[in-house]
Amino acid sequence: MRYSLIIIAVGALLLTGCHVQTTNTNTVSNINTSTAAETPTRSSVNTNTSAQLGGKPDPNRIMDNSDAAEVWQLYGTAIDQEGDGSSLDDARLIMPEVIQRDDGTFVMYYTYTGPDGTAIRYAKSENGLDDWQDGSVALSPSRTQTDPNFTIGGPSVVKRADGSYRMYYRATPVFPQGNAPHYQILSATSDDGITFTEEDGLRIPNSYDDSTSPFSLIGHGSVYALADGTLAGIFSVNLNEDKGPSDLALITSADGITWDLQNYTILYENAHDPIVVNRDGTYVMYASYLSEYPIMATSSDGTTWPPESEKIGFTNSAGETYEYLRAGDQGAVVTRTGEIYLYGNYLNDIAVYILVSE
Image (cartoon, rainbow, N blue to C red; front, side):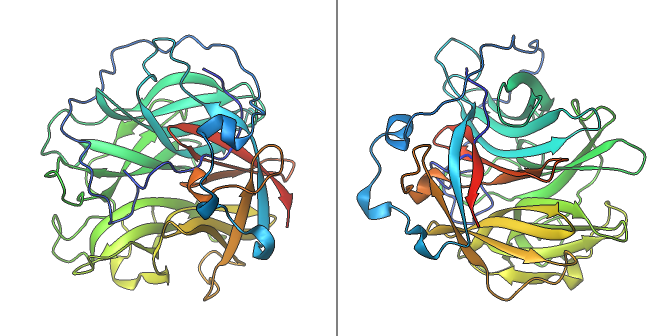
């Protein structure tokens, strides 16, 4: 397995916050977390073109970057499948979330979906770009199919005032083939940011579990701190009776446990899978608009966002225009030197992108 930074492109809108999902991945048993951490393998930057990495691009799906507010270039593969018999073989690796810890190291949390079920795994890097050393399981699901924590993914991690970490993630019990999942938001805590333990209760419930909830689905989201220390989150949601694509909703919390569901704001319709970072006092959100193109928006305070988002673009490592479906479920991190890196799904792997034009 190679571990080097790149933004991951979405191979399919499966197991994301979108309501359009119809594939059932919950019919398998859950991951066995008794296995030891994997032995790190070699690291190298993948500088292949997009065609080499993922097959020949569809000429009808090539992005037009002429009107893009930012353009991101493929840097390399962070987590991939090498066919070496490891537990990552035959798995889908999606939804990266990256933080930089106090010691300067970068930790990536990502969603693992394999023959043995789902889990949230972690990997580490010294610089956030190269040499990603895959670890093991950060958070395990329930083994009971009716448990809301049966299928998990889409982590978002925040550091708390006491130095510990809280992870927010979307989860669902098993759901019938062809039906939409009953995603809602749960949480887990960790002292070291590596091994997480599920907290009791639902952070943001759906209306199947709480009749007062305005949402039938609350999927992949991004939680971040505001200037006053309270939290905000932007989540992929479907309002009750809404059978269409997901929208992005802003929800706030004073304590990180109880979220104000009655005063949510729909920010962008038909958008999903956001990530929010704070860069030099400006909040920057990246997300996807349907399966058409990735988007971004900025906010001075984290709660007031512009009415319209902007399109962003991607190129392969050679600077050639990129096919959209190779970039999605974005993750992002702002380094201590002020650089911003994007990560995302790349087919069944995870990749890293660097900013080349803004």
